[in-house]
Image (cartoon, rainbow over all chains, first blue to last red; front, side, top):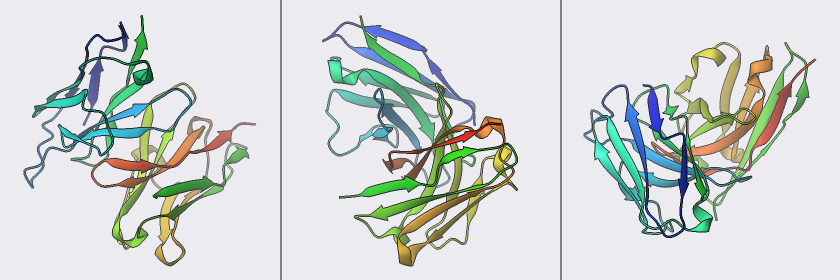
Length: 111
Length: 116
């Protein structure tokens, strides 16, 4: 499954919203009825960390300004009000089929 | 607190071998699938291999099939990646990650450099 993210780079003003798109080459609906689409954040110089799993479930401790939505092959990560600590690269990832695959990443930076 | 600590990276010549290890703590390793994910310098994330809770099922990225072997020792709370016939394109930071249909915990990574 090929995961395609856009945009590649996203300059955002502090306090403004941001939106990242992720499209999969096949439906990510699993035979168990779940859709295993996740969003992962990697801050500069740090290990990746999960933000969202199963399209819209927020990982414990992740601020509620992060939200995920979508279905089938089209998914979106939204940040309602960007803060300085949100700078980094965001990846979508599918866990429905082997091999597991990531999108190419979207770099979020402050204008 | 869940912790994953990788070790074993280093500089190796093309065609050489390395064995990575991941020490897990803060959770019961035997109840979780585990995985290795790599990141080439300046590039994105790439899943490499995964192993079922009891080691009876393993999955690999095509380019590493036949060269890499994932294994685990639940009694010693450890995950391993045996890498043979290494290529320049295997150069990357290798992360150990807990897999629950997403990667919910990651280690700090260990750098593998394949170069002559």
